[in-house]
Image (cartoon, rainbow, N blue to C red; front, side, top):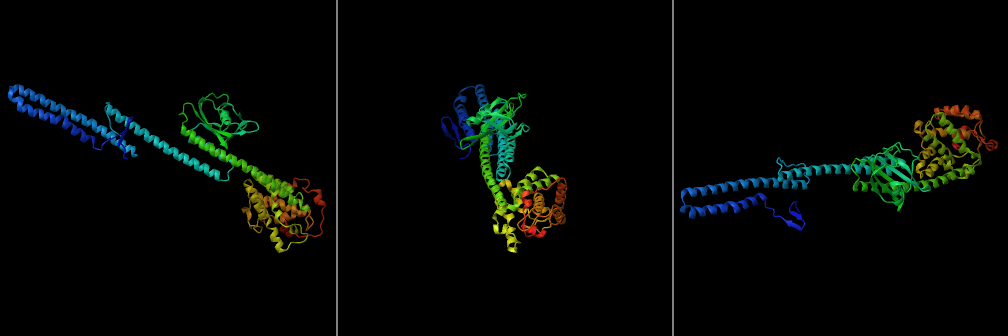
Length: 511
């Protein structure tokens, strides 16, 4: 149905015919004024004027002419009013069709003029509201896109939550946005992510469940909005009044935390749309946090299993007992000598313990063989880095450790395995562990050869510097060794003796 084809009032819907008001007004004027006046003038001309003196007849004629003039003036005035009304109707019709850039010129202060001015204000406000709505829709679309991308990525949950509170602060034009989670044991809310005014808030700040608006939302699991209140994360010295909107983070009807935003008291108050947006985001946050916790539990269990496998590898080969621990100690010394960052140090520490976990997939008759391996057995032995990678790959947090395990038998000159990487294509953590692993293998007894002396092992490292090993890593390791009084070798390993010996090239193939 076309706009303005029906007019609704309290009694129902009254249909309007589509004839133009201007034509109706002209027809009404003719029927109500001009035709009766013509009939009256004709009657007076035939029956009145002949029977009265001429001066009286002229007076009547003048009165009649005045009536005609006034009727004409009245018609013109009404016509102008109708034109204004028609203009308002036409503009209202265009506005209903989405054309909001039209205005009605009105210079007088009469009712119709005020109506036109009111219409202009309404259309201008409506246009502004539509622009705000489109802007809000675009902002929310980008917000949801960024949050969705973050959820789908491998970013840590902390980075995702920081992204959410930052974007909610912008989307809701808030002073701050804060996310707090419940510590179940202490029945307290602790700060997990903040943005805006509280970016520098103390991470140790806690709020008892049930305390204040935020604590009540956590306890009752129902959203709340209030004004003229203080922000729970504000310092005690701050007395500024805020408007506060808080929603619970619910998962399976269980509250795991709260998400709340604040505005200064003088800003516009929170509305229902703000509550809906914050509630929807809160639902996604609750799911993300719960999934993260579940994944953490699964990864923790899986990691414990992997560590048990790594210990099992050493347990079935007494010659490698303590090897991973010593490799880790050497690798950390190298990392510290090279000024490596803490994140890489952690990768090196974890990777050193797990670097040979793939040997769990190598048969004992190859792994413990006291004589040289044949070419086919060497190929099987060289599969243990990729086996180790496959074991670690399901644990997302071990992605970088998985890379170290995969590459810990590559060579700096590109002649290593399993991928033949060259130079700095090999991650630094792996280049460090390669040197530490090779050194410990050389100075400990193995089933197929007796250990080398420390001097001979150092000579081998220098000989392989720039070819098998990264020369910078070798230099850092030798510097670190000079600062130690004795190497990290257990007495049990020192006392082992075997009959077969091999050259250094055999050592590298059998590590």
